[in-house]
Structure formats: C-alpha cells, structure tokens
Image (cartoon, rainbow, N blue to C red; front, side):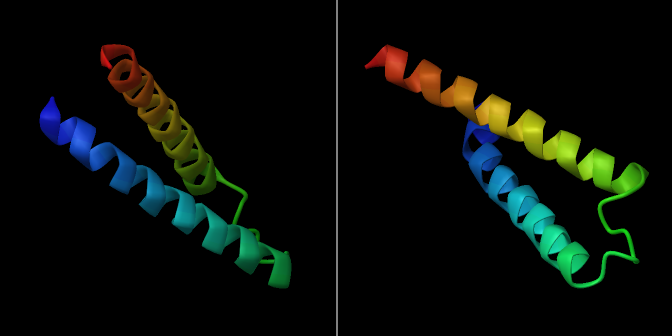
Length: 65
C-alpha cells in the first residue's frame, strides 16, 4: 500500500502531462484527432481515476493529523 501511495502522485502527473501534450497537439492539428477514439478515452479515464485516488489519499493523510 505504501508503494501505491508513493507512486500515485507521480503517475497522476505523468498522465496529466500526456493529456496536456495531446490537447496541445490537437489544437495545432485538429484533423489528426488525437483526443478522439479509444486510446484518448482510456488516457482521460486513467487520469481521472488517479486524480480521484490522489484526493482520497490526501484526505486520509490530513484526517490522521
């Protein structure tokens, strides 16, 4: 569980940066459609899940103090 708590913020940052890069690339060339399809939906879903888990972990840490 401690590995999960340590790795989760880093994973969230990496997924968010990947999503940001895709959003920027999509703005420059919308015809490519980087944010369309199954892969983009998976990336967005994973980022949301990791962000929610980070929020839960942070709330639990603050509740312990």
